[in-house]
Length: 221
Image 1 (cartoon, rainbow, N blue to C red):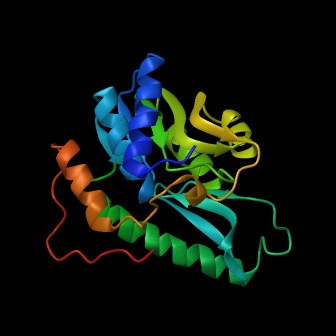
Image 2: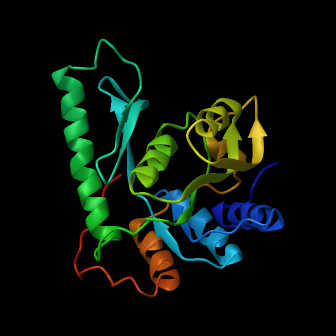
């Protein structure tokens, strides 16, 4: 199956969740692309949309290769990389990602992050590959005392699905592919989502959220 776009994938995912009788208090998208999917899911489940800001921790020699991830509340997850665990190079990568997290948080949560205590939370992304960023998002929501933390994605690798099943209450995917390729392989259109697109989605679905300060600069990926 190939999704036409993130919007169409979100509609399919939302219909699947609604058909299963899923009830959510909050749908959280992972910026940036996951927020587009999450917006459609939130519409179909008739609940608020927000974001949970996370960043991948890239290998010092290959930033595309993830050694872990971190969330805006300080939750940190590091995969095994013994030779780099205490290195100044990895410390520099983590420091850089902390700065980016702070900028994202200021831009997307000018009034403060969402209150997740006692909430039934569904965390949504546009796909689940290794599952590192999603796992740190789940752990962050649990740390914030959410009542239930579940995961929903249009497409997941079988290893990513199994990984998240260990830490979340439930994992639902439209497609779980044992021969998973890159997330973008499952989309006809997979253009990069911008900060402004995320903000527009949040402002039209979270009416209680204040607008970001004018002149706030975009956050570089």
